[in-house]
Length: 417
Image 1 (cartoon, rainbow, N blue to C red):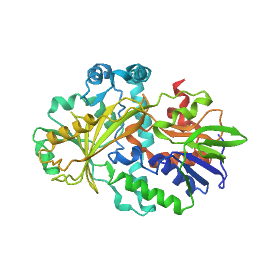
Image 2 (tube, rainbow, N blue to C red):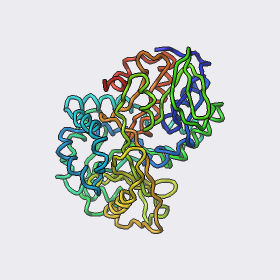
Image 3 (cartoon, rainbow, N blue to C red):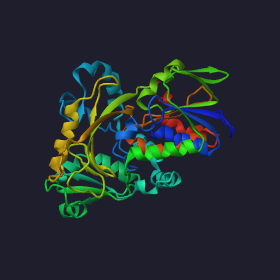
Image 4 (cartoon, helix red, strand yellow):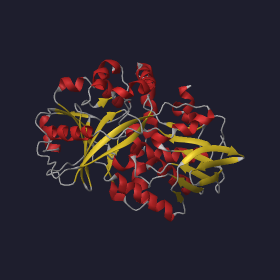
């Protein structure tokens, strides 16, 4: 790896929450930083997520038995996981890798890698929020996962074991305790798992915007442009739609748009957009004290500064297919079952974003082999907020030469062959 001097010019491609955190840590270390993105900072996937800081989310999406459990859902357009008929051929290579990632021994290694990446994330987000002037925006109220009965909870036993084996606090509670924590929850949910150490960002876009404002104040240059290619001519040169920019180091943090930038270097990273939806209700008619997960419907309901956000579902379809309005409507139906007093009138705002997902649920982090000064920081999937602060610290530390290459081995872009 090529260590950077403190006055190195570093270009970060992508101004989502991950790219913003990477830029923040690089600027703190004294580097000259340019952030390049065709869209406004934090306006894509970072805009509409559930805001969770889920350091306990250590179970990959591909768990043992995933093919048996997921195959039927993928064919059902109303299920939490759907692959449209016209996208099956394109999704097939990714799905085959996804099934392979569910090998039990591999699942354990993935959980270890996620635990390493998320260690201390809650504290680091708190520190970041204080540094950028919005300490109130990061809270630690815990998460409540809800099940209809113990039989339903038993189906997720493997995921909860992975968490507990790695020190995550997860307390099984009964119906009375559920209602004590959240009186608005339907009596249909009789069993809960409370995770007291989990946190949240109370409004993700405002958090990202505050970080962008702090970066500008610190001298970081924001360039609204699309990177078309990355080339080497002594240093690095980023070829953009509106011109080109030179840099000593380049960090690819462009979310679901990242993989094509690596193809000229012989890397075909199987990055897929798992299109996620939300409904945002400004006046929900009830209150929650913390994020609540309706485990049977794969729906995440989170209180926000601006109302209540109902998010979830996984839909394949790539970057070009238009949103499916029915997917957003299904979120409202599920949330009303779990929270009978929920008001969805007037019409809630709905949104769709591209979550950048790898088949093994691990991001692509660290140096590109044989390309000194080229770094990756993308593919955090459903956990971009959770992993963003630590990713920034890891990348900045590695650029400075203070983090050994083996730290990045589980997340290397070359792991896909």
